[in-house]
Amino acid sequence: MEKMLDNYCPMIIRRSPLQILLISLLVLVAAGALFAFRQKSVTLQVDGTAQSLTTRAVTVGSLLKTEGVITSSLDSVQPTSGSLLTNGMNILVQHASRIRIQDGEKEIQVISADTSLQAWLQAAGISLGSNDRVFVDGEEYDPSQLVPYASEHSVVIHRPILVTLNRDGQTSTFTSTELTVGEALRAADVILLPTDRLDPPANTPLTTATTVTLLSSRE
Image (cartoon, rainbow, N blue to C red; front, side, top):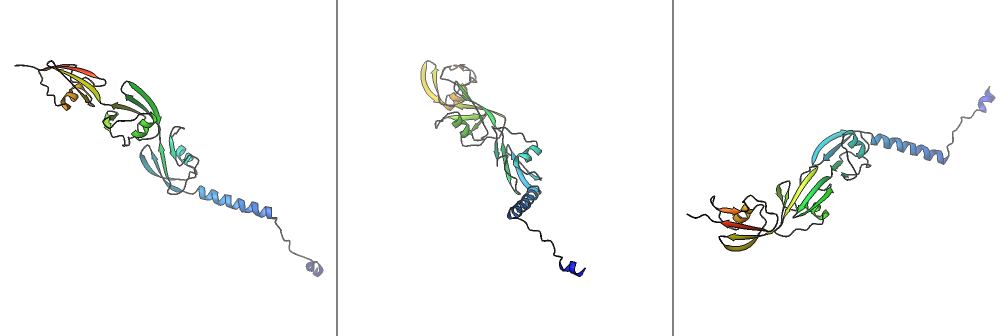
């Protein structure tokens, strides 16, 4: 028995460098998985509306899917859908809008995820003059302004329009960016009385060069 004990030697497991490398990689992967699946606090902003969320989602795309946010290739997602979520991350989603631009008799349609009016005009190849006016969904905007999100927008450009005024037999001309005949006359300091005869009527939209006939009422 003593001889057998003398000959006993504990078994030593030797690992090759490749095995050590594989084990190290497995440890790193496991640690990365634990890090990725840990709970994170993020801010999700969709079309200008922000909310704070706590999630275990791994990527931006999986978070959007969990929250029911549907996107397409036309939309803007920052960071991209494949990006790994990190604690404190801000995710911005801007859905694309369909914009119809009316420039005189010309109509142009663009699709953009940008909220900048100037970006829409550039995409449509439209440049503005210093006296031009721009209306978005019926409200006047400065080209540098951002427009709140909507799935569709209507943009109307009012450029200076030539108005020929025939007033009691005397003719004069002026340009105007007002929206109607009546507004154009008031801007030109032409006073209208309720009993005056005006052709076309004061509420006629001013979209092209127009000739206006005014017959002033007399006592």
